[in-house]
Length: 403
Ligand SMILES: *Cc1c(COP(=O)(O)O)cnc(C)c1O
Image (cartoon, rainbow, N blue to C red; front, top):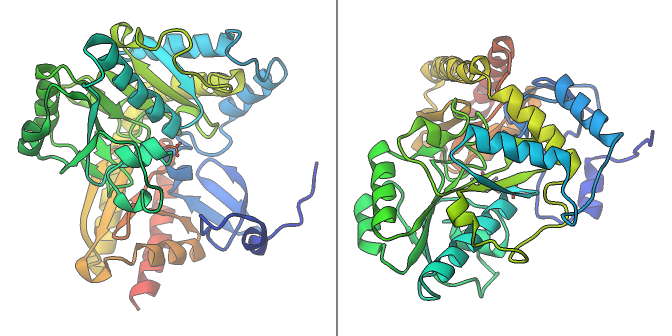
């Protein structure tokens, strides 16, 4: 095995400065616990940003990687492969979808979704039906098309000219959508719960209204479930806990339990517009990723795991309420399942990152969603004991920050 003589300082020497990682470097993980170079232990409430849905190094996922790595790593899509076909079969069995396109990330899944929506409208109506409606504060990834559809202007700054034909409307505002949608709209794109935007859920009435308006104007409804999908909200996909069904759904993050993989799910009718040669990916659907994802989805799509997510949400809320009783720092705790956001009170707005750094020092890995919201997206099977221990660390961190 290679020994690495690297430290956090190495990051500043050799990495493009688009990230600002915490001071410690984790080297090993097991379940919801992680150890750094110094051997210090952490409770992981971040889960690799809603990715490690079964914690670190889940034995069944390790086994899936090991078995597949002895068989076949990569082919390209010039050939079909068994793990990809089996995963596609599984995803179509357990969701509304009839067809699947594989890629390597959430961004790529969304790129495929946006392109398909345009192509479907082009094929069935014409080039004038190309407008995409999305929502303020939404996040759909970092490619140029994804930041353009995303509702956070800061991610577009400096990258103009960006693709045209995209409109942003306030989230949960049906009247605004009613006024803006037209027969030129090819797709309405939304997260059922906005993740990066601050952990904000769509209201049931809004969702129903969006679906109706899409139907009236023959626009496709695209659900970006990159963060909400694969058990995160307590349903396998968040749409399953609502009474609407999208036409296209994108999935990544938890799908591979830590192994990079993305998928776009849709119906046979819509999929037709991605005819031979219309889109593609070299790695998409590679056997390693699909073997792990099949195992991850199978393990997560169990009633005990999904019910556990709902129960653990309650424990998180109880523990956060206890901290809040003492320190009064949370304005609101929101979110669904194990996608939890705790918005800081006004006077601490803009200071989310300070809590992140303080938590790391106390042995807790935490996330933010924007400057004002502490976000928790732990493993879906995090033991209750780890939740309590992590909350004790959070309380110590809060005490230090507010002192
Ligand atoms: C993380 C995320 C993406 C981007 O996924 P990547 O794998 O980083 O490309 C897109 N949409 C949502 C809702 C996300 O949370």
